[in-house]
Image (cartoon, rainbow, N blue to C red):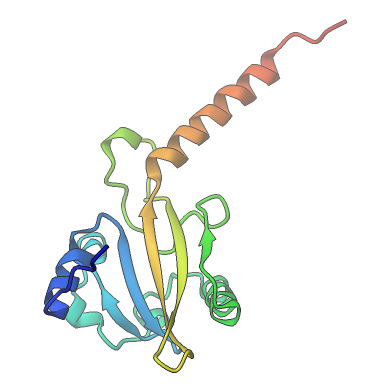
Length: 158
């Protein structure tokens, strides 16, 4: 199989920006290096505005200790790390834009941390991918409520 060659970073960024997931790349000090179109659309903040800025200064509501612990674990182990909405409902409190999950006030997110090695093998940067899982979270919560109601109102066996 022959690899397809791309001529420019512009082509790569076009692919990154067309993905229906958030993609953010950080350096080890949590400065934003890449902020894709999904993130622009949901945050309302441009890539140009955030480039080189510290995540926690720009987003003081981010769970800093949780995020730093996950990033450190990802970098130290040099392995991807998945965090589901059940562990942490969201990283960025974006509005719910899913019409099928009207009951959700915010976007539930699964976050994948990915270590990024430089040419010398050192992890100098890491990425996060944000998946909007609001539909899944809302459905799960509705199902849990039905099961809870059923088990609470169920007649006791004698």
